[in-house]
Length: 426
Image 1 (cartoon, one colour):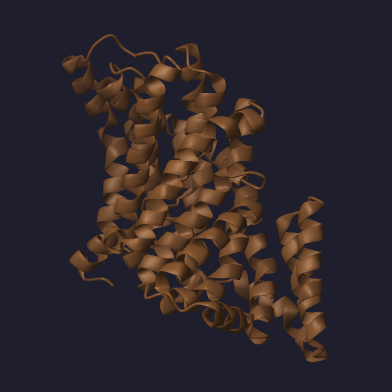
Image 2 (tube, one colour):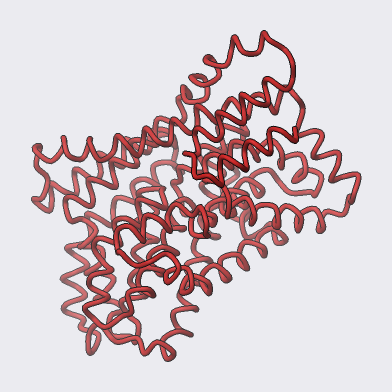
């Protein structure tokens, strides 16, 4: 196993694409087990990893994000929230967090939320006098809400890997997502004086608020349809991606922005992102399968339980491990490798599997905004052209608050389990 770890770390440090890193590490592990017959089923495992019906929602969520961006639906949401809080100091910063929470209930992806807000909101913030590094950091941090507030691509993939109810996961993610969003708002409030954040409008205008609300109704109905439809059992979480696309198109038609001619461009922008995710899943499945065959999760679990059987200490160890993992690995790959490793430890610590799943997914998601491998951090920097180091400095308060909220939910199960228990879907 030492050789496998060495291959993984060296290729990762050298900047080899994460799918290749996982594939090489998996092949090395298969070779180290010394069973030639295992090589005959590697190709089968690659395709089996990606050929899961539950994952079909992923390309649809990506397409829904592209459609909303192309049709200007996001701008209607921004105008509505801005009319509500724009008169406050730092109002446009609050707008970013609130709009991110709404978009998260539609898109389910951190990169999609961050990319849309980077393109639409950051230029406005800079024109209003906000620092470019603060604006970029805020958008980057708010992207984390994408995979937390349901529906969530990350929750769907965890459900595929673990067998935990995805509907229960969706219900469990709602309160944590809101708490992280409120934590960000607290950071903005503290930063208001230090950074001299401006107002967006001079005063609250009830007439303007009414107009913007009416215009935003079609966009606001999209998350209501998605979340309401899933919880009511009208459609499955797997079908929610397709519903999101249809809802986005309907909203575009109402706004008279939808044109058939835009579909080819939307498809072309969606394909590379979708392909990248599925290649990682396929190649990563080699590693996941080989670890299962070699009983690596059991060995790690036994080692930790041999060190301590105190539930609070085990949770703290998992928290520390996931911080390091999030800083070093892409989220999908980290899920594939560490889900089977940490589930036995979570059970030993007394965590409900729904609680663990939501907590684990949020911890992995936070890695998207932490250097050196934070994918959402790179997306934000590439779009806004603000250097990574400057964004990272402004990100620190948001990351600290998010980790604090996440650590709290690990020790207070009710934060996650209240809604699943209330709805009877645990």
